[in-house]
Length: 125
Image (cartoon, rainbow, N blue to C red; front, top):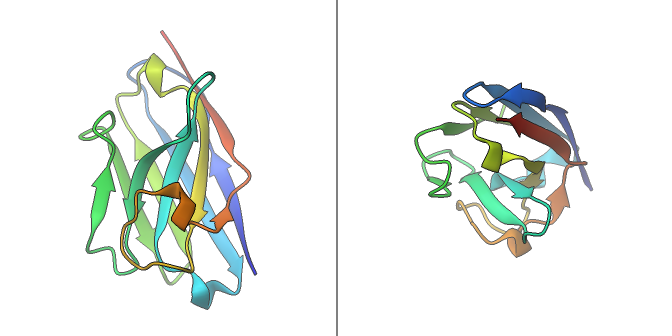
């Protein structure tokens, strides 16, 4: 089993920045692709950014491209999301995810079998 523990998030004004971190523990040798997804009230879960095992493939949702940066440190079994120029529409619960099924940067949340506890990000206007 793999456990994912998130940190970061909170309340920020529009235009500000936040950094999310997610650390994996347990059977980390089975952690391949990792990513961040978010769930806003009244909306379906959407992928935000995903990164392959070797970090040679990264995908961003169009809504965050150019503002968010995903990275990972395999030595620390961690994935990060740097969020800049935040907008009120970025308000959501953000969850990190890890997959033991695929090593490529999958945007389908159904391919991720481990999830963090979720953290609220609120951007005020």
